[in-house]
Image (cartoon, rainbow, N blue to C red; front, top):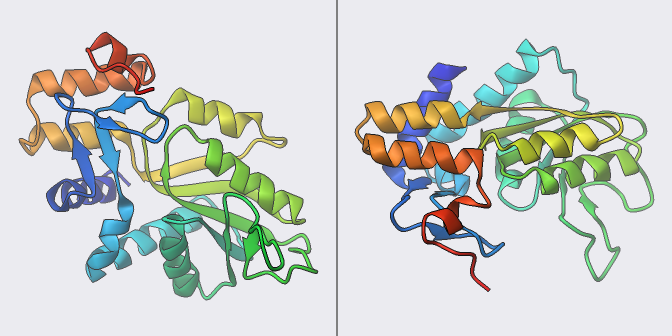
Length: 224
């Protein structure tokens, strides 16, 4: 898994799908200034990476003994990667909105008839990125509310924040989660590949320990 993670990290850093800049942090939607930004949709441009990521997710499913009846992608960036995996596995596919549509049938889950449910089928949820885990946990809840069994959430990348672990553990029952690329592997690739200096690597390691206090400590207060 680490070899695949390194491939994703190296490719992502090279094409700009993963950006690291502790000197000029990115403003997230929450207003916090963070030294990392990730857009896994950029991998879709590269056929070899589309296939590599889909196969990597399929390998996790095989190795962990997960037996899904349905694959579910999360809106929006998880949708294409989930669809590619479902096609590879020849499984039914749905995607989960962050909230129901405000019009029409007001679906939260697309690909499923609004008047039916998942009928107890086992569903593996596919995310592009697990950050704080809140939206991922809500996607799992949506599957369960639709009478699906969802015990696993897989992603391309995870920041490895403690908050995410808490979100998945708080579900009843708790949900397992894992990623193709982890934050420690990303930092090692950034170091050995010469993408960042040792001082910059240290700042990123500090961010992971206190992501919501890091900006203030380093002169980048939350935007209001």
